[in-house]
Length: 96
Image 1 (cartoon, rainbow, N blue to C red):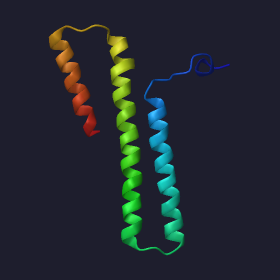
Image 2 (image 1 turned 45 degrees about the vertical axis):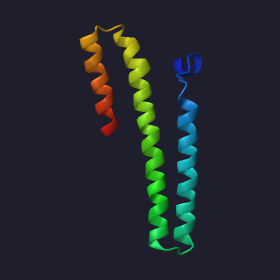
Image 3 (image 1 turned 90 degrees about the vertical axis):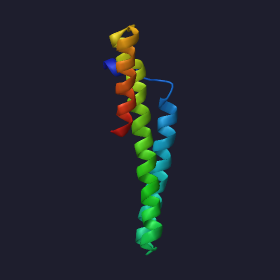
């Protein structure tokens, strides 16, 4: 057994991320059907936008979860000034 099988890496946000990715998967399948069915470019673009947004939100949630749990746990308790810099880093990560 691998380390992942013995100690799965799960956070409370993972079900939320899976839900968003499944939504993106559904939108993507719709896009493929729309293209195959000859739907308008506007309709297709709208669905592609929904796919992008769902994936971007899943990524953002995953990154923030990592910062809040994995990185914060590794760093440990911080003084107020250091905590402010850490929080600033977390805030800027939303632009990834």
